[in-house]
Image (cartoon, rainbow, N blue to C red; front, side, top):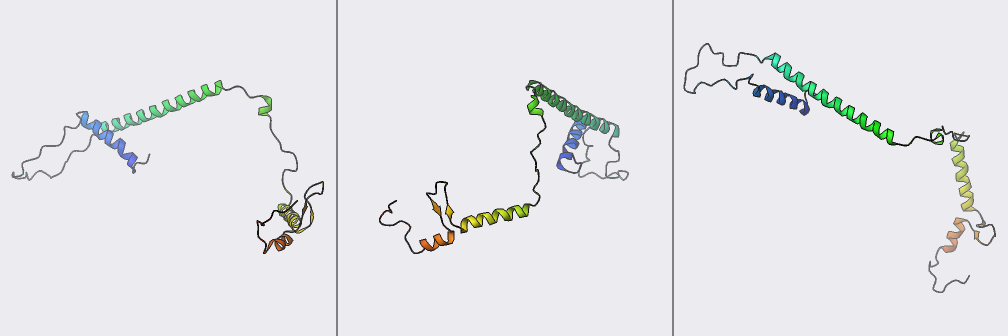
Length: 162
């Protein structure tokens, strides 16, 4: 918690309320009536300081309470987690074995690999060939297919016989 932020204001308020309720502070000093003359010896401000001992005790109590709560929460969390771990079944040797991928683990030249893949894809799109092993369906270059389709309707009036 930062002392300057809004979260630092909460302990200060609690300390002030604790001091007020503990009868350490007797409330505000009485005010003289508005029409009375001021005492020339009165400095016009509070001359006594805050009781440092009581303030330190209150702050120490707050710190101790916060540490107690934090310690209790850590203890509860570790106890709960340990109980959860005990409830899990033990791992088998197959689950705990170290896995090593088969070689080669790295590409030696990834740019050459991707260039080879792009060239193979381009050759496949730009060349003639069969689509199946029985050689019943053929493929033609994509440029030739576009030349054949340009200017023709996509859904002909009479169905094409196969």
